[in-house]
Image (cartoon, rainbow, N blue to C red; front, side, top):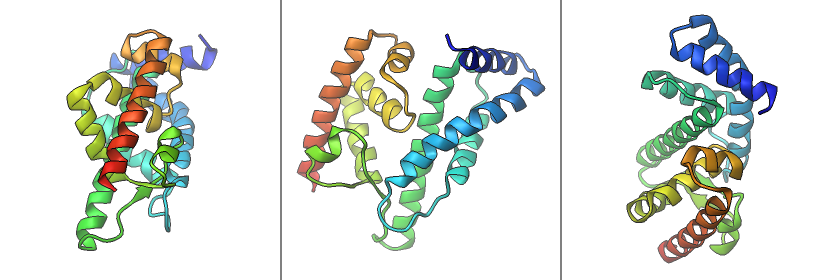
Length: 189
């Protein structure tokens, strides 16, 4: 385990035990990593950016703090951060769509084979969310793997740890989930 990973894991555990100083240190340590993830996701938005990476991180962190749960390690924290970022982006896209009566939806591109498979460089975040919900109804683990990989930036090793499966299983899950999503998103286009 890398020293910074061990340190973040230790801080998360101390924070869960009620250590306020550790909670503040978690924010300081995780902020840069979450901001980089947010920057990568927002760079894939089509049109004029409506979020700054720091804003997305702060909104996601507020959601994380509101959950009131303890995180067992770095991977668990990043998994929850991925879910929070997805929720923030989906809520924002819904709000924009509602505000503009159907226009201005937040389109994002996927850094996976999914974007190429759909024949499009960008996918509407609301369409992706609906497709992920449908996939979760068929196979929750595959939907979670996509969410953690795309929104959380978790590597295959980290995905395997969070999902409690082997790395080859993660690779198979991601491959089949991407194919299913590409097919579903193509059918909806």
